[in-house]
Length: 132
Image 1 (cartoon, one colour):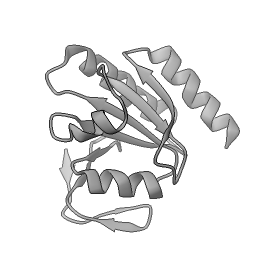
Image 2: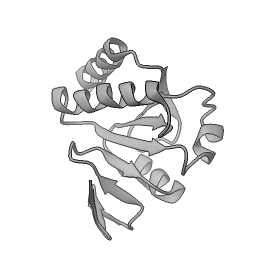
Image 3: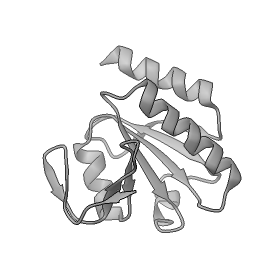
Image 4: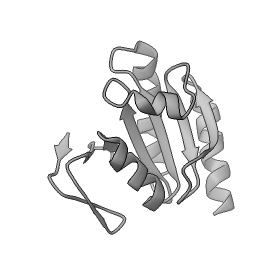
């Protein structure tokens, strides 16, 4: 995984609280960076996962597949709740993995998907891209 001390995201300099995986998924490591990303990213699609969760690993694989199928117009974001547990409370997450879809500049999700349903995720992404 590439890590940068200063990452430029959508024209905004962000501290080391963000890094990119090899699949251009933004990995968020602080609540401040997460909030800034939601306000400035293009159509954030966020996966909340736990590093010790087998189902989360499967869903992260589906999530990675989506970055190849739908590489533009969406900002793919992953959050390890081991490090940012506050977000589970803020967004009412009771089960992992959970995928949240936000509109650009909006702090409230417009859609929530719980579990490893790759077909539903692909369908929702297609729907989002049609409305852009």
